[in-house]
Amino acid sequence: MEGLSPDPAAWGVLTGFRDATGGWRTASAATIAAVLDALGADAERPADDGRVQVVRSGRRPRLARPATVVLEDGTDLGVATGRLPAGRAIVVHGRRAGERPIR
Image 1 (tube, helix red, strand yellow):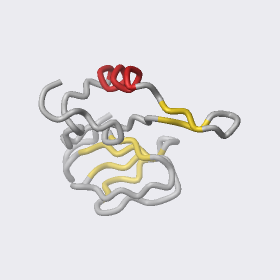
Image 2 (cartoon, helix red, strand yellow):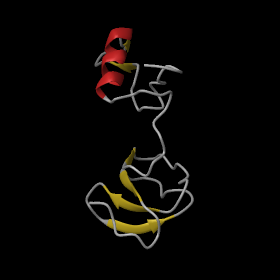
Image 3 (cartoon, helix red, strand yellow):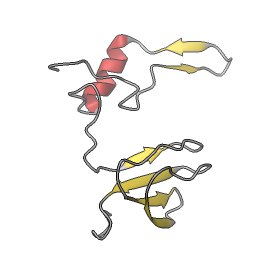
């Protein structure tokens, strides 16, 4: 990978987790590198090119441009701008208003 190394957080890769006993486990550098490689991570962060973005429940990122918002259950909320609604896992399909939805 040339240039800056991929940032695992920017690519949605967790570098650790809590196990069943509550202990913190850190993923090895080799495992993190393998996951980033599988994602095709060739830059510090993914390009904002209108691809699908999955947002975890409770997160409210601001959209860079208008996008179609689809809930986890498939409910289409139409085009949104600004901050996303809270409390549900959603999928954001990047598109400009007036374009047909990406399916």
